[in-house]
Length: 290
View 1 (tube, rainbow, N blue to C red):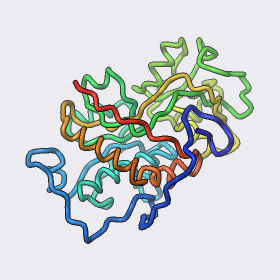
View 2: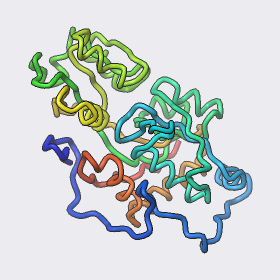
View 3: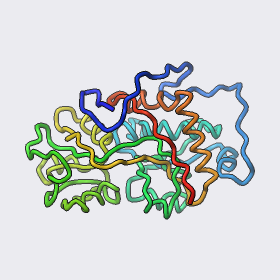
């Protein structure tokens, strides 16, 4: 995949985009009022949510392109659109979704406590997290990279250059753990947006997290920062649900695969992250067995 400003990142761009009719301004298809409401087996999470007619979804509120609070406080971005696709398949319209701001360190607690029904929040699937929550997806694959000041005054070209240097990342994130393992001195912030001022004032030499998040930050602050463009991990983004709710997890996987096939996933991308990044190939979902 290629940033639309010419920077390369590690995914393969597809040759064309499906053109959809009947879409909302957000990029997801408008509901057809002639289609019967979906029905689900009694006792499943899908049935509970469909009967309630509402769903609570955790997402980021400070991630340009993926989950960023709009002027009215409602988040917008690719993760938000994925949440809408799932809700729509439950017969729940976008105005019946309750969005809860979810940062890196509280994603698992929010799922475990039932504060949210699911989390779509640039949420990397890994084995440690699978011990406490379950994941559908992945629905996107990113890679951890490095954001520096424009012109790269420190000459940072990769993760090895960060050993012994002050670097900012989000508290509780996979990125924070990777930086510590590489020998960096990590300034842990509540969110990645909180890392920009320390980078501006020289308190840190870099910010590190997934390349698509960094691309959004650079795009939102044009001329101030640049992405090194040397990803050193693979970060499969998943949808977090309650541990061992395999029926719900597998149903979401079905929804994702259908969205790949019918073009709704591509439309969601183009209306959000696609304003900066080219359309990637959707990753195969991982129907793992616990």
